Image (cartoon, rainbow, N blue to C red; front, side, top):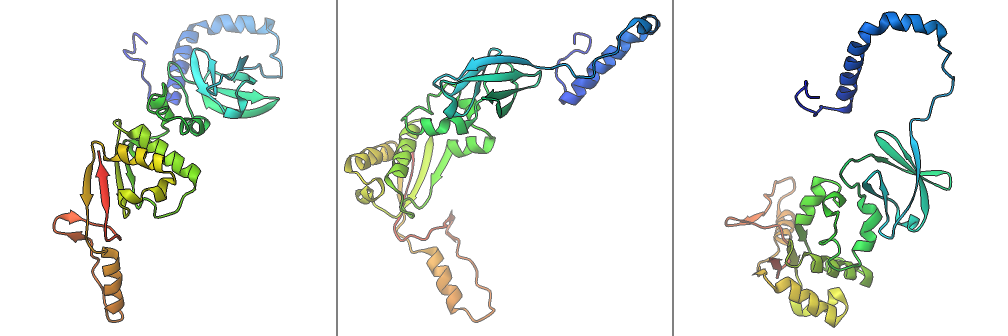
Length: 264
């Protein structure tokens, strides 16, 4: 590596090719000695030698295991159980009761967290995600990270939700309060938000978090979708009708006659 000047490779295939080149160069001068030794060597066994180590580790209460100084998440149903881990050079296999449950890419110096293993527990603990130790590795892709950083809740209460789903919504707002931005579009005034959260105390707490630091925009404008539908219905058959998309310089895509948009 010192002669190469760097330790970065384009892929694992390039790294393997680099090793083969080094080995071929080192063994080039040993061919004569190898030919002398071959007649005295025994035939290799037909069975392949195992290329992994087996470790037995316990799943902690956070649904994680520690293998080779690194942390990996597993299914929450395994909490408290002891699992067998087959540790390969580039991956590890988690097995329980003889069944292979997961194959995980081996990490070095970085935790491997699957959000599916933890998100169910985190959403029921206000502030847990914001202060989660492995938050950076919990988000699976950049798209998820962007969605979390700039969240838009459009047509709040457009679809009726049950109480459990509203508790998740309140937890989301509480977690983002003073930490991340959120834009909310709704045709309900704040005094009617009890239709969303089903409980006066929860409603008051949610509204308090939303309006604090918020910029509130009231849009007492007609529905542009309704106008477009009316224009289409009145247009002659086969005639093209332009879409109504904006007023002045402000883009509008709204079907409400009275709206509230907030963004801390």
